Image (cartoon, rainbow, N blue to C red; front, side):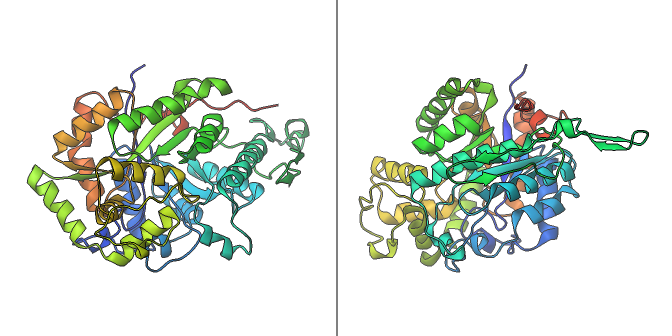
Length: 431
């Protein structure tokens, strides 16, 4: 079976660059549903596997525009489902500030609405500011992952409460649901007590696809046990290969094979017809950065008020962050490796929120993605355009055709569900 690159689109409405919305013609509102539909349709034109919507549970007007003014992702994706036919629909919902029964119902519903295209990004919510909106205290890193593991177990159990053929709807006998094929969950754990079943039949995919983004040790362990797709934060090829090998190497412990988990590093492609054009685009984007936005992002990611430090001084020795473990490690390792000033790190985070920026001609971008894909660093990429719609259109029009010509990327959608398109097996119903 031919192995093809997978592409997810990170749909951060105004673009992943903190100031991308200031580019001429760029989308400047993450509340414009018509524009969001257009973006989803553009990704589908590019034959992407899925669009992925992050979420944030607190508002900071000084941070990234799309973190503060946005539509709730499940409501939005239910609308986008009607404007698309093939592309997967992924949304972030927190395991720290949600409940398993509600999450199980919501994603089972989206899977039915979309005909088998739903995906849940199960995150633990790193930002402690979210706690104040739920009248509670933010759990520490280890506790968040402990809760998340049980949360995932409950949600998947609820999805499995129904057999595929439980709904009989036999007009002659008058039997609508075969009671022998629907069961209670009866989960009684440390953090959750859930009777079940949910009141929605088994979804078209059996279970919606599980996405995760944790890069710490506990995050990798949870992903190896439960995830179908992992979004990773990385800055260079060797680092990406090491993460890929570490994560895939954990799978046998849970009776899983390497092809049961798809790894998609995040990448912001800045594509120009010439190298000069590409770098001019990046320079224009960087010229729009304000200190307020970038410092707010740095403070959020590191869990420290970064305005206390001299931007023209060295990157401070911050130690581990309880907010974003993988992000903090990747960023600090890069800063030390390249002897960065704090301002250099600030510019890097503003450009792609700490993700990898790949700037150059279509051929250069395609060559680089191919190298990562063929040398054990990635199964594909989570594409993070700097701004919409042009950043996405540039990639679809200039990079995708090159990868297709090389036989590395599909020329049409295959299968009927997101699992089909990502090469993921339909999970059996667990007894």
